Image (tube, rainbow, N blue to C red; front, top):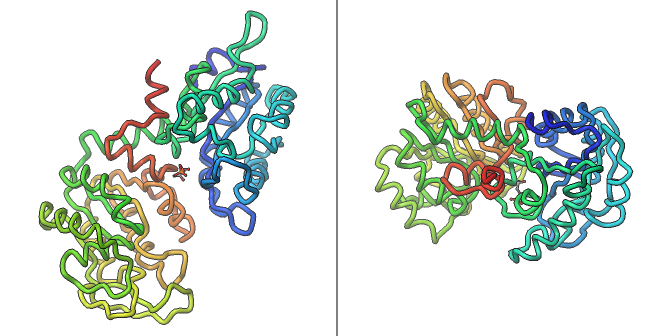
Amino acid sequence: LDDLLGVGVTGRRVLVRSDLNVPLQDGAVGDDGRIRASLPVLTKLLDHGARVIVTAHLGRPKGAPDEKYSLRPVADRLAQLLGRPVEFATDTVGESARLLAEGLADGELLLLENVRFNAGETSKDDAERAAFARELAGLTGGEGTDTEPAGAYVDDAFGAVHRKHASVYDVAGLLPHYCGDLVRDELTVLRRLTGEPERPYAVVLGGSKVSDKLAVIESLLPKVDTLLVGGGMCFTFLAARGHEVGDSLLEQDQIDNCRRFLDEAGDKIVLPTDVVVAAEVAADAGTRTVPADAIPAGQKGLDIGPDSVREFAARLDGARTVFWNGPMGVFELAPFAAGTKGVAEAVAGTPGLSVVGGGDSAAAVRALGLDESSFGHISTGGGASLEFLEGKELPGVSVLEAS
Ligand code: 3PG
């Protein structure tokens, strides 16, 4: 970004791709972590006199306008947090967007409506994506002429860099393009996990599905000293050990994979020893803590138990590098929050680099009132940070690196 500021942005329309994909509750922004993470780049550009056009997605609408995925509530919160007015276009590349983009003065900001309301954004058809990208780029005034300043593109949406989408990938080829500070900082930290991490290196994985984490487990298992598994996904591992899991989440088709991981990893993989169970997922459900190898029929495991938290904390004690992705239980409901909280505190207490991998785990840190500054880094990218650790190419990064 400093390169762009060095060239000068006053009077130029700069298209910024941010990740503003935040949870909405009753039509208002819930956890606003991603909006706050996007502020530094926007503020820098505005302070330097750029005319900023922000494009972003919310949720997964099906390529057409859908009011429940509107970015309007995000525009309101963004304005509050920026402490400046935010213009909001009711479309992405239509008349509203074009008129407002043309009317921007130096140091003013426009947020476009959800970029995924356009089928071209996520299309698998390269030509369709490219056509939409041209419309987005056109909002900046394009490459410019000798007399008119050219537009520019900044990718600051770390959480979306793993998507080969028009606003993340194709548009970069159409404008002078720059890497936002958030993307740069995220990559710098994550590279410390894939290079020569300081040992002991421990990874904590949770969340509901083993199938979402297969690739990352494959790639991390040979590199880590300890892999702690909690959350809904631990029940498929427990089943692979031959335990009854009652009505807990179970991915039958992943049992063989889990068995293979357990065979390969020996005692590197640590599973919960006790589990908090209930008959239903409800804040007022009657709960019990039971041994992880004796979950009664009709009961669902909804959090790891206190013995497991102690065991996980003991394994994390002294770790010099920790990566944590995925809650240990249904932390949104008080009776099932203690596991996630206890493990988060243990991660925060480790002496070396601790990285929280985006999405639900980052939201859990804030929802449970934990001190964000006690973690080395809280990533804004869930899927993006996992794909980085899997060693996959990230289209939004490679397109910036290519030039
Ligand atoms: C995320 O929430 O991880 C990012 O915003 C990307 O969203 P997506 O998984 O819907 O592409």
